[in-house]
Amino acid sequence: MPQRGNGNNTSRRSAEAEYKKPVTCIVCGKKWEVDCFTPYKANTPSSGLCDICQVQTVTPVIRRRQLKEGNFDCFGKALGGFCDQSNCKYLLPCLHLSAVAASYRESSATFHERECKQ
Image (cartoon, rainbow, N blue to C red; front, top):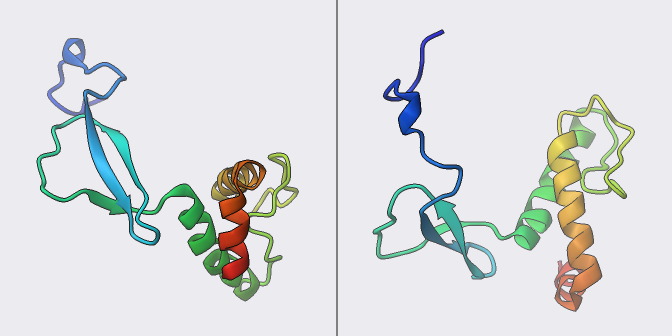
């Protein structure tokens, strides 16, 4: 089987990243860092969605898609990491975002406040 990269297995990098890349949430402005294998030399941070904004932004979109496809609009409602819709194409992201939302609900009044405003 052909090898990717430089073909030299002895020079593989370790599993740990050597650098950090700054990221800013495009919705709420929260800042954090992610592991990166190359130096990040830009003057501005990368952008993305923090966990809470990802839950609040992606969930309604996928639920509309589920209804359009003739399925239950249950995305993000999995409790305790369980969902009985095993053929759903959104199962893995659903379980992940359900866990994220549950952890925020348990630990943050801010989540409840932001959730109610939308």
